[in-house]
Each structure stands twice: as structure tokens, then as C-alpha cells.
Length: 297
Image 1 (spheres, one colour):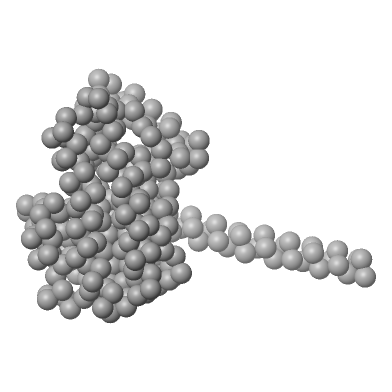
Image 2 (cartoon, rainbow, N blue to C red; image 1 turned 90 degrees about the vertical axis):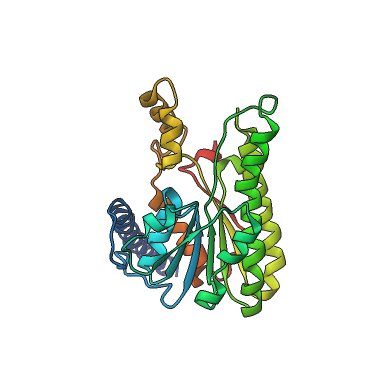
């Protein structure tokens, strides 16, 4: 009997190793294709992942003209969604010019009247996924941050997320279906020097996510948050280029993340696409670090 048990355990062990090998192979191909897709400004709505989780669905992404927002829009569109890109001025219109399955919205997320019109319910009939990516960062310690700067950062990062959530949620609740993903930050989870307003705003986004998730859960609507650290976006590039030694600043940024590099927007878009999909149907109120291990230190 002991020998049979031993042989059974060995077979189970080899089976698990076999499954892990398949999973790692798939993940490597997926990450490579994700970066390839986002780096190319593709005008075709094709999914290199072979996934079509959003066919017939409508997504609304704020801050969508660049960076993480643009990567999210590309990912959802590639999986079959019609994506409404919301951004300031003509940014969204410029970004999606000539693109298939994309529509622009000119919106300032701080303006409640504009937010109400941007829910595009009348145009699309419904919104299946809302991704709140709009955000800004202004450096300053608690004692040095002006009230004007404080209010500006919170208005975009926290109030903007709240307003979008407030006006989209009722439509999702009425349909008893939908998912919201807010883009937070590692600054929502740990304190950072000279980032008083930014930390406060992103910490608020994390807690708003949890509260809204509990409110919406009885109606089948899910709310989650993804928290990146350093990601290669125009916002990060502007911060690095403003330093006295941009090359050194980039190296230092990469070194703060245990994986030893700066993340790509596609690597944030991937978990967002999962959380908005039916594959995550039992996932809500999660504040997920996607930060190369930064907040584990």
C-alpha cells in the first residue's frame, strides 16, 4: 500500500509540473503579445491573445488618450468591446481618429454636468465596464503643498473617480450587471515623501472602491482597484525629465521595484481587462497591487 501511495504522489507531482509548464508558456506568449500590440498604433480591432471576452459589450475609459488609459482602451477593444475614450479637449478625438470600435468623449471629470452627459447611455444603450484612469500628480510635502494644488489633485484623482462612479453605477444596478475598475497607485498603500496630495487622493480611491463595491454587490455589480507603481507613461516621463539627471532618475525608479524594471502600460491593462470580465465574476472590493513587488518591501 505504501508503495502505491508513493507512486500516486509521484504521478500527481509530475502532473502538476506539466500543468505549470503549460501555464508559464501561455503567460510568456501573452505578455510578449501585449507589449507588441500596445507599442504599435494598430487601427484593427484584433486580439493577439485569442480572447473575445467583450464582444457586444460597451466600455468607458477616462484618461484614455494616453498612458495606461490608452493601453486599457486598446486591450478592451481588441477583445471585442466598443470603447468610449474620455479625455480633456480634443485628446480623445485625436487618439482614436481612424480607429475601429472607438468613440471619443471630451470631458473634464471634475465637472459633474459633463460627467452626466459622458455616461453615453442614450448613445450606447448601456455601459458594461467603466475604467477610471484619469489622474494627475503634483509633488509637495504636507507642509509645502498649497491649498490650490491640494484641491486640484483631489478634484481630478478622487472626485473625478467618484463622479464617474456615481453616475454610471445606477445604470449598472438597474441592469444588475457591470464592472468598474479604478486605477489607484502604490501611493494608495504606502506613504511617500513629497506626495501628500497624491497619496491622499489615491488612498481615497482605494477606500471609495471598497465602499462602492459593498454598496453595489447586492445588485451583481463589481468594483475593484488596480494599483501600479512606476509605469512607462507620459506622466512618468515628464516627472523623470524634470529631474536634474533623467537617466539616473529612470534607473532609480526601476530599482525601487523588485522585478528591477519599469512596467509597461500593457501590463496594467491586462489585469484591468480580467477584472472587468466575467472571468472575475466573484471578484469585488479588491485593491490589487500591480507594481513589480514594490509594496511588498
